[in-house]
Image 1 (cartoon, rainbow, N blue to C red):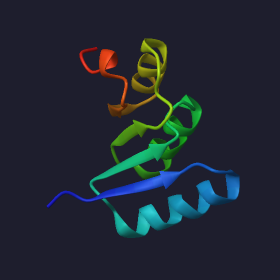
Image 2: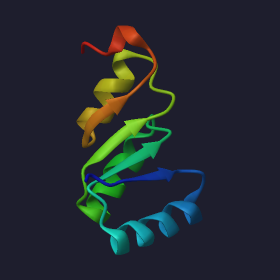
Image 3: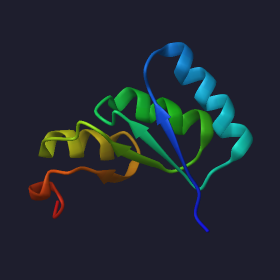
Image 4: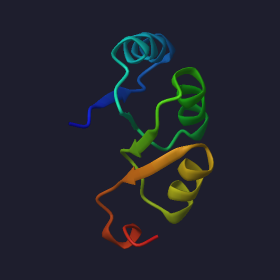
Length: 85
């Protein structure tokens, strides 16, 4: 069974709290919401080493590229035109 931990990047304190929880639970993947803040994606991966899924507010090809360039392994989006990128 694959485990996914969702990380809601609301503010710096919530981010640090979630990273501590993730390092304790060791899920298979982390879905970061919103996924349009590339620096947060990179920071979470550096601090956990767990593969990242970027989700939430991914609306453009550039959003997808930015997330992938900062370490996301996958993207979730409801914008169908982005599914084939």
